[in-house]
Image 1 (cartoon, rainbow, N blue to C red):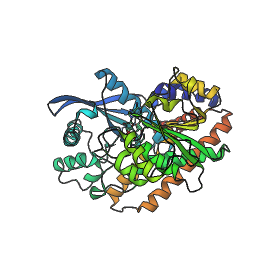
Image 2: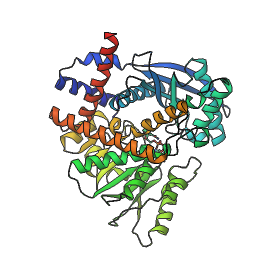
Image 3: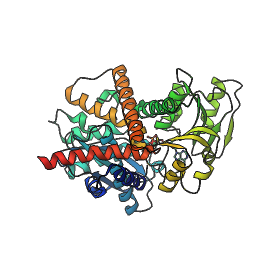
Image 4: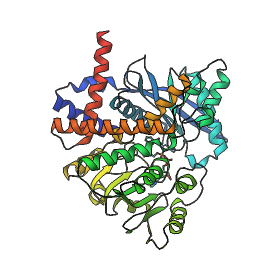
Length: 436
Ligand code: NAD
């Protein structure tokens, strides 16, 4: 859900629940808490951090992304929006008494920086957080995001250098490698959660073997594709995957089988340079000899006939201009943050295509991050098996809660139900604070 969609859904939920909408607007207002410039690779790069919510006694949580923003205003608007969305995602999963939504950004096209410049940028970002009084396990705990996955170690090490006496230096950021206190499952966590959520929704709605088309073969899209295409009950078939360079599609009844090697070598590989779709097609040909494969333009992912569409690349990609041509017949699972504009969301609901909102679908990454921070403080590192089981339980519970609220409110719109549940949780916090 883009923020405008989230707010429209909350307004609708507030009306159905008899809540004063102004209270929730106030309770999640975003603001810029850090804005500065870093110098990397001869470029001056703006860096920003936004917080949402009004509780000084909770900790900031949310990723830092790297993007080619058109202007500083556009960068500010993006991180503010994303911090408010994160605030609701945290509330929906029950973390609202401890964490508030937060989001950061570097205003630079990630393709302009090589890996070592990105690492230098991550350390300099930490210095700016430090200068703004935000760095530390009990203040604001960032994570990777688009263009920055894999850079958390550099932030943590920069924090340790500046704060040599802090025993909790590892908890200053999440998404680290296991050598620096990260959890093995973190890189797979969001894609696992989007897959588990899709499965719960499909089962609840009686959708049998669902064909799934996925936009974006990066961290989230590649892991989702891996888990869905290897679904133990064979209830999901990945019939198309796109990235910037094209869309790979098949009519094979078993779909595209995405192996772990494909995820590690191409999809979730920060160092990968080249055409992801071509490279993926070559590996699939080897793994599934004789499979029919077609490569279309990148934007054709929207119109490929399928049952479920999983946007897992960027925001605002399903718009009023393309929603009428969407190939998905049953549902959209918002793995990316804010992929559906407000008009497009209404069109989908009106036309009986279920939208599984981002704040519900893609929250397992933040669940895992919160576990990582807790492990870094307690010193007790949970096994991957335990992490996976707990993430599964949370995703299933929250998806069922949202389905239940939708039934109670008598709405087919899961966006309204999820926004309503998050709203009620945020407001309960407000009353507690007021009561104190
Ligand atoms: P990523 O950078 O690892 O992957 C994004 C992929 O999308 C890349 O392969 C990129 O080439 C591709 N892409 C970019 N433009 C495209 C286009 N026009 N068409 C098709 N593909 C395109 O990022 P990610 O971490 O996978 O994040 C994807 C989305 O999921 C973002 O919206 C992010 O905010 C959201 N998200 C990520 C996480 C996480 O844990 N990584 C958690 C919650 C939400």
